[in-house]
Image 1 (cartoon, chains in turn orange, brown):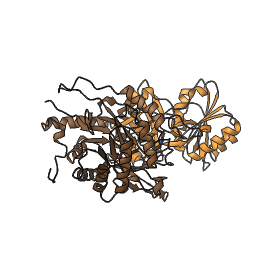
Image 2 (spheres, chains in turn green, brown):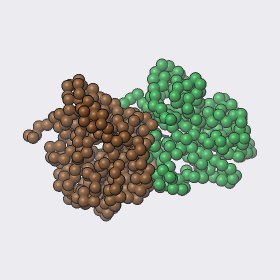
Image 3 (cartoon, chains in turn blue, red):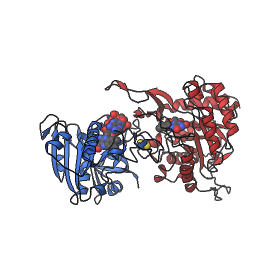
Image 4 (cartoon, helix red, strand yellow):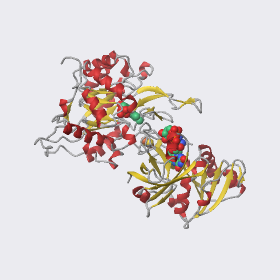
Length: 256
Length: 323
Ligand SMILES: Cc1cc2nc3c(=O)[nH]c(=O)nc-3n(C[C@H](O)[C@H](O)[C@H](O)COP(=O)(O)OP(=O)(O)OC[C@H]3O[C@@H](n4cnc5c(N)ncnc54)[C@H](O)[C@@H]3O)c2cc1C
Ligand SMILES: Cc1cc2nc3c(=O)[nH]c(=O)nc-3n(C[C@H](O)[C@H](O)[C@H](O)COP(=O)(O)O)c2cc1C
Ligand code: FES
């Protein structure tokens, strides 16, 4: 079930350079959101028609609280960064499929987040613990954010070497000789491409969260497709909708 | 006050004049999670062709001020899957005509289905239209002639009056349902194209399709869309659409379905007063899934406020030509 609702802002604070944490009272959505799903956030400026897709960073179903963490990338996210307590913002969600938590049960799961791909990995870690053996590898350019919120063991990689392994997430995985049975990942396409290759070499399962421009967010407009290896059942061509069949795909099933 | 909102389009009765614009509403299934499709005058489905189409590479869309550019490239699953899955869904979801006429004592028409058709050649259009001939759930056909014509080097069918007349009459002969030709605004004189469609036997016109545009990403110094150009839609094009509907309403006798940037009842009423018998809501549904419902309710409220007992009193009521 998808909901479109007005959410009340509980707080919006900066947690890094140009990175904001937005807490919303959104009962319906928070109550049914699964990790790896996202919400469409609508602008209050009528000139900006299209929703901004933002991943669920944390969802507290009991209290109906949704946490989104985003980076200012343009006018829409800049507007959201200025939201204050008691402001209202319109959302549709939860959208997309989310990570296949069943694949991780009683296995060693490696959660990999790169940059602004880190937020969805937080709720994923929380839901997998303690049944699964969870470890996170987080990649940053320089300044860290959100790393302390993770309930599991965290390995850090930074491009400038200011913390953890100097380099990218794969450098950290190799340096720390981290072993896993399954990888869940979200981050830039280059990172996902490298993880897809790594998982193939290791013979382990790998699921990645993809990004594409969206207009409807609900599967109607076909804006957001990625290329698939097999003919997709819905589209009847080798295209899958990131907003509906995704955003999480088995890396072997799609072209990255 | 008893009000009549039902209108007649090409011999088919709609419960109200508000429908969805092709390509912005999928098959309706995606939006049925947000509201009851039975409230709409009609559902207009995404363009369908005789075989599946892959569409364009991504990025396929970008936002522009009060609008967007799209170059989806008419990706679709082909008419066979469309019939089996999408039309089946619509016939399961949409209720039949009901006797409980809204105050009028007559029949309250059911929500109708308009199937939008695309093709790369005359043969492809005909093939698709023939495959739809036996579909009882397809009440009307809307023919998108903004598709690239492979035989004419990719020039759209809809930009040359002679070509429009020819494709219209070919489709008209093959079709079992009434045929609405959907016009491209990317022409010098849209009335010429509208007259050509009428001469070819069109039962109605839909207008406007998107206006060709381009956006450049200055940070990356490249095109924002993989296809380079895309079709502009949304409130930004509304005044252009109103002008074109107005011009064509004075040039042809067949009914016009007006669209282009409709977001509010006021936008829809402008279109109706300019001469449209019905309207479609497109891009605005991306901003709020329930936009079409708000438009229906807003028209109802307007009629109440201005004591309009029949919506048809408003059709083409703003004009400067002799009737
Ligand atoms: C499934 C999914 C989950 C995401 N989760 C997060 C998240 O948790 N935190 C976060 O900071 N960002 C996330 N993003 C990226 C985020 O959607 C964009 O940064 C945001 O839309 C930019 O909007 P803007 O108005 O600030 O930028 P502008 O560049 O002005 O936006 C213009 C248009 O392009 C679209 N757009 C721009 N960049 C992207 C992008 N990278 N992906 C998709 N659409 C884009 C916008 O939605 C808007 O329609 C996610 C994207 C997807 C597809
Ligand atoms: C994403 C998208 C897909 C579209 N697909 C089709 C299509 O398949 N066939 C068609 O005839 N028109 C298509 N259109 C055009 C719309 O039906 C409509 O004519 C146009 O967008 C103007 O209306 P609007 O401003 O309300 O969106 C599409 C428009 C958009 C934005
Ligand atoms: S955004 Fe419309 S189909 Fe995915």
